Length: 476
Image 1 (spheres, rainbow, N blue to C red):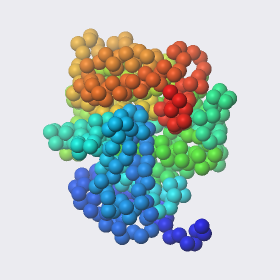
Image 2: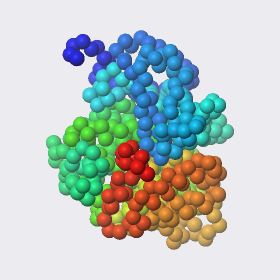
Image 3: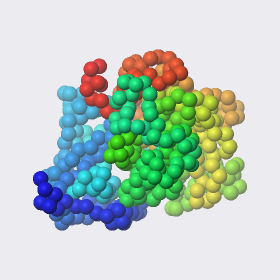
Image 4: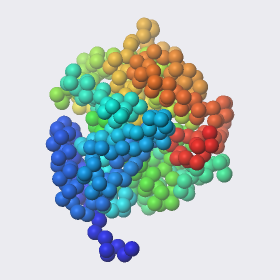
């Protein structure tokens, strides 16, 4: 059909950024969701050039799912959007398949037409069970409940920013084709901070950064990382649920941009042995009435007692939650001490081998950096594990807890054992969801070679939860 016959919405990047930053400010200021809902419904009704609304939600392992609803249908049925939960790994059984999506209207995004298609907008959804309550396995919903509870009880705002590393490889769908050659091919071998203007890695970074700015990310810096063909695009702090949403959007944008360039953006933690892996350093703090509660100019490393107790609780439960922060077979290749691996269960302002680093900060930027997080982990489970543990976990009676000689698991089987045997993870997730998650991780591990060895096995790529291959998964 000729494009002249269509009049779908296509906005400039400047217009997109203005709309998204305004929506971001409303979300930050906690404008009533009902008020925002009415404004969005009016906008959708008035804007004739929008054809569909893409609703996003994540499953238990963190895979992002997208459904396009015709705009006219959605305007009539926005409060009764159903889908088949039995088709989502880790969700309902076939006999109880019907679930609902409740639109989270503040989490509404305008997106560039050249990468997402003209006439579309995005909105995140909460998964609702048949009885109308939040669905237990919807980790985004669980994180929202924790954030709301902390704000209601204590006036806390939970803040986070993530440094998400990835690789850019030659060819589209390189992960799915990994078994054919047993390797990934770099697009650039320049290294840290070095990529000539106009080369494939720099063009990818520039384009992805432009899209992210348009979606309201408020970028800070971007650059090639230490390993060949590796990249990192940094952006600002946000409230915890919005920050987790941005992780999902970051990876979606990078994958979409790479695909259009005929390449693959990969967030496998260690796709190539012998070079640095991909991390997702998670910077967190807590504020109250605009005041950073982690800052204390007279405290050790200028951190407050609240911040240090937060750190101590995470160190105490480090092995319990390791599987939530490092969710794949491949993730345990990254926890290698030869490549600045954050596998030591300790806290340090300088040692980058520590699970937790205390960055240099001031009253505005004081924070705690959890370095042991892999970029393929479910971002909502990561944030839930970090904040709920840091606020509500126990503190072990271990001499010199912050510098004790303890290490994170070096394989997923040990991590699964710690997770299954932990009373804390059951308290955090509930017995049912905990068991579902552990079973998914066990199934993935059992399809791979038990010993990691010195090269990446095809199975740990093919059966990785972020490598979409429904046909292959259904064979097991």
